[in-house]
Amino acid sequence: MITTLTGKNQITIPAALAAKLKLKPGTRLEWMAADAPDEIHCRILPDPAVLAGELHGAGRRYLLAGKKHPLAALLEERGAEDCGRKGVL
Image (tube, rainbow, N blue to C red; front, side):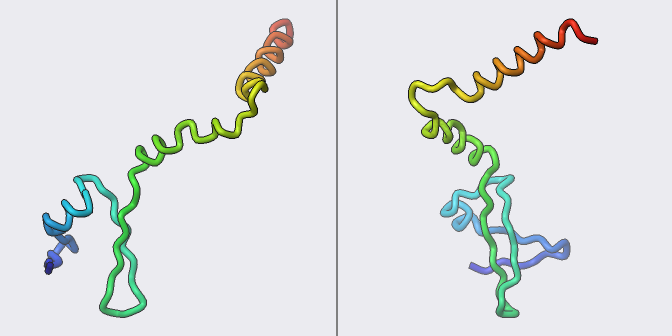
């Protein structure tokens, strides 16, 4: 597949290649100069929303069974601090 660089330094990714790689509008690409002077490397960057979705809940496996959730303990601690400050201005 051959494409041409436009006057605005833009290229068009051939439809067959875009379909094969599942590229869609808004997909971010990282371009890098290769060691060879006549080569360019391109990498498809992951969608930040997809990454966030994949990480959601990933830390749950590190919670210890029977122990209080660390966030619950932190909220209780902050609540106790707030109760102690109510009379102090």
